Image 1 (cartoon, each protein chain N blue to C red):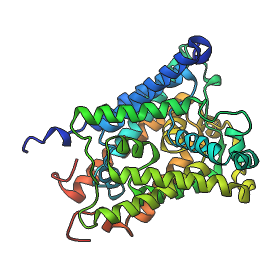
Image 2: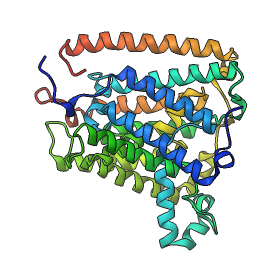
Image 3: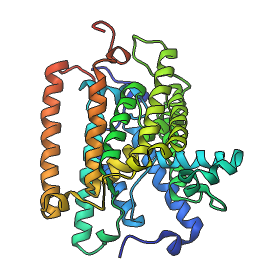
Image 4: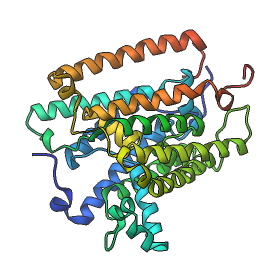
Length: 179
Length: 198
């Protein structure tokens, strides 16, 4: 096989997984909890809402729990951790020449279709993650490692949902040909 | 004994720095594994590329084993570790919705942040979608608050649920994980041939 360009080379999945497991363990050891993503996006969003419509935030129980009255939704570990994710992703991509304004999409669809699908998928993901009290990071990865029964049920549900729909939307992702 | 109260041990700024470093490692590893690329993530659902399963399972099992050992050695107090409380049905329904979002959108929240950090436009659209979904949840949760708090089983671990020692459960999960990945790779080669994407 021809030598792949650097930007197409990724770590071996088992090496990446082992390092991620080690990081997850150290996080639990240091802080008593695991990693998270969607919760950080949530808090940044609520902070913006609190700037624009503070009264609405104070009167909506779910939002008030994070930002009611004098509470600052950004004063939470997950916000700093999410900032770190962005920095870490950027540096890793930059070192390998992968920081480029581009759209990754299946060959059978246009970038525009890909953006629309990404937007719709994101809405479902954001909504579902709040309903499930965590996303792939906070529930599946972190809850899975400390053997939370609910997190394992959640993880199976995520994969079930994905496999359930995958066949019907295969045109989005399949290489050209069999559609 | 761990875990520590970071803001007490290191002060507020020290705790923030630790969290930024943890996040940095998280983002760096996800990007290095190729999780900034939606096609690679979606390929999992067609069994064409098992990177998602391999990375996730390996990470969960390595962390579980280390947490179990650290607890057995008395370094870590498992009772003080945050175990996601089980709200069974909201978790399952939320998970199903997320699965649909995953295959349509090609990311999960963490990986979309990584994709966005390397300027993938589809990831940026996905993050925009997440914010809309989160906003929608905040505005609508009052309509089904009872369901959102239903089937609350508290700090329920697999070992409590099965009535087995934690070591046995972890050993079982490791065997299960190795089997799934080993058989999974055979099936993948059978479907797509040796030359299929890794």
